[in-house]
Length: 200
Image 1 (tube, one colour):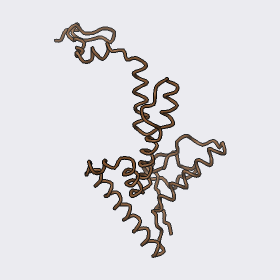
Image 2 (cartoon, rainbow, N blue to C red):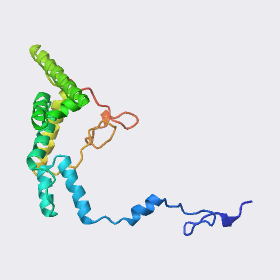
Image 3 (tube, rainbow, N blue to C red):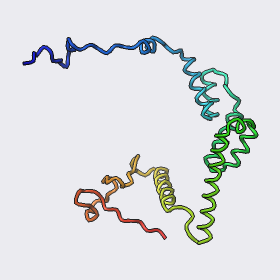
């Protein structure tokens, strides 16, 4: 028969249990009190490195810090990233070679990755051209639907219409997209029966 003194109560710790020991590292972390100037320098470094030149410029003025890099250099890096996101890989390679010509020479893996992205974009363009010549849609219907939905939500918000912050897609069996009285579209388990959408 177990003694009742060995059980812990919510208000006090069991005499047999010890609090976990803090490691030396945890003690040192708690002892360090970072200066505000160090935190500000860290934030400025992030904004500069990640390519937010206007935010970095405003933050450096507010925090009385000197900018870490010239704004033109940050904007050039941002333009290269933007070109890659748009799929203009050749423009990105040319801009990178103008900014820092040795980068691609010293990093063949990066150069190969950019060329591979360029090949993917070329295949995508070729696919669109073939579909267009066959009088077929060039993009998947889901792209048009996503753009249409985003436009409709933004238009409603711009028009100050009362719409929820998040509108479910109705793909997970959630009932927030269901119209009242639409009971004939429900399975026996309460989930929706979505019909396949046909686009021509």
